Image (cartoon, rainbow, N blue to C red; front, top):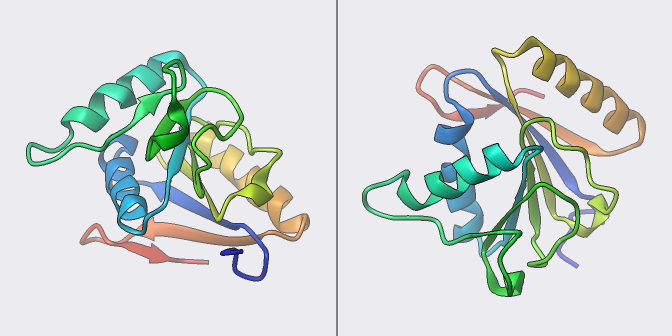
Length: 156
């Protein structure tokens, strides 16, 4: 298996200098470059639809191939957007946005990425709570923040 030490890596991305809409496409591009499939889980259809539109248009030079969970034949999609559980494209990476719940099948992923808005006190508190709970249950966690030049740095 490709899991390091058999454990799922859990990454917390603290969005302060960029919005989700600026940061997420770049992280999805990196996943595709590594040959990984991804799932992006939101809590609302509105956010899912907004991300669906964004991934086609965020860059004039390219787009990210993806599908929403309402579409058929998701198994070959590099990126699936969903509001629910499950792993229809056998993704290695699951992105959780809008405080989407931590998946019960976490061990099926190489990475789980929790992205939260540093300007939203409720989101920050939720991320802190998730960090404590996941660390207490023995997961390997890393915390990422952007520096002044916009590069992601591992802080913990």
